[in-house]
Image 1 (cartoon, one colour):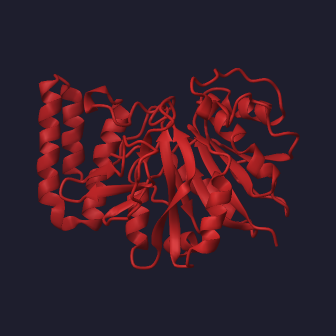
Image 2 (image 1 turned 135 degrees about the horizontal axis):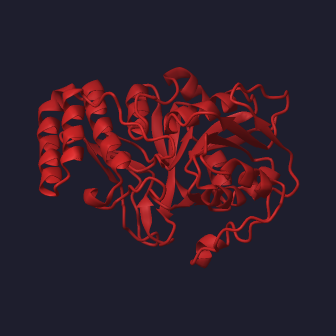
Length: 357
């Protein structure tokens, strides 16, 4: 039986990013090496319609990227080359032969993990899938990435349950965002992307150091590992899913990094997050990040709670210095509640889950 990778994207608006990502996957899908599952988390606009227009080969208007390195992988937008596709309702039931392109229309935006889990369940129901690639919809894929992932799955011992890829900046395509791994500072509940800012052309180590996790902008999982460990935690609206899953998998499933699978990522374009200063982050990204830090520490590193609480008291002081009394009060409530209830957006708010807290 021919095996393939299931690529899962979650969108809530931002269809221009989604179709660019999908265009970069057309060759792999046409070759039978991958199938794509797009989960629409109740987009407040016509994003679902625009994606179906792209699949059918209708013209969609989205600007060409500045850098030829990235443009070569998705420009011009030509659609899915007449491939079959299916639009599934929220209570999905796939046909005996799943379509190469599957769209899932959800009626609620309840977070990145919930949307991804919806797609994961569909992928796990496909007996031909031997790898599940969770990919940010604001990423563009190198033409050889799917083949490199399939090879890595075949070559790695069965105990390797998750893989990271090389992720570079969309607007600086030779600059690394992460080699696929993020290190976790349990004393402060903060993370660091390994080799962030390095040149793709310099020697890069791809050593997995614990505690840490696969960078979620491009995260590959074995179906067997998902069935054993379980799906992503839906405790928060966004952030922390990768570390939570990795800690649950520790001692049973190992991580590995794939050097020759590359994607280019916008980094927090839809949530106002990323590597920018906290003062410039959106309120949703700021508060969800703090919530995740507390939840993860209480669950997996309880002995580090005193130092994490001290660092978050400093976060309150910083917001007070900026005159942001309301956000400082919300942070205080999160600290007292141990990160729960996790912040949730207004119905029209957008999100992108991949940036670390």
